[in-house]
Length: 318
View 1 (tube, rainbow, N blue to C red):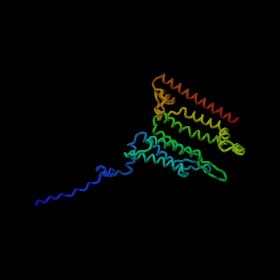
View 2: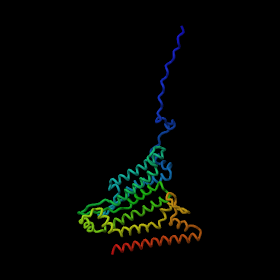
View 3: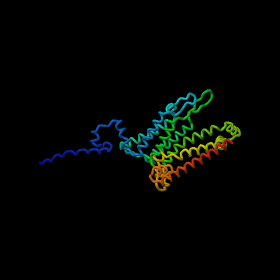
């Protein structure tokens, strides 16, 4: 009787490999680089806009170790960490998030965010600018002998504002809107400080009289305080505009300039200071004449703004 040959049992099917465990053998064999080496090599793998955003975020963090405030009583300087609050914490968290995102991008990590990296960096920079301006308006105070003294801002907080504006302009570097942001960084502190001084010069008796008549707080601010300080605030705005009228260096590195007429703020745009600079260094005598004409135009504009500011100031005194 012929016996049927024995058939071996079928081998069990191997489980399907998990895609998360599939790695290159070469990568597994290669030793991991130290963290310091990875941090040092990360900027070289980023684009220029990403490098600018990273430098601005690092500047925000480093600026918090610089003098932010001056004690009005003892004259001592304090860093941001000496008067640490929710605004300083928010600045650290935003700057740290930007740096962490850029570091992961430099290492080739692919992860999806609701918006593009450039849009998120610009939004983070704008939010930092708002936080710094809020801190400038609501500065820390010291109470002594029943009186309240406000701390004077130092150069460190303005450095943080500049870095925040650079972070906001990282996506639009070398475009017209970047030049606008660069000039805004110069104007905003002047306008804010002038407006604050004008509002503090309004006598408290006017506010108290309006409140005694039953006027709500918003009506007191709008109809009494702002009206009394309006001439001074307008004067500060005009002087700030005159201050930036001849600024050339911020526009050379942001708006760049354009030889043709362009109204697109997302592209390089011509400006009078950059045109004067380009024409002044040219070898053509006719261009030198045009440069002198542009300089005369800027001078006349600054003169008109200064005269208007002086007239408004005299009206306020009378």
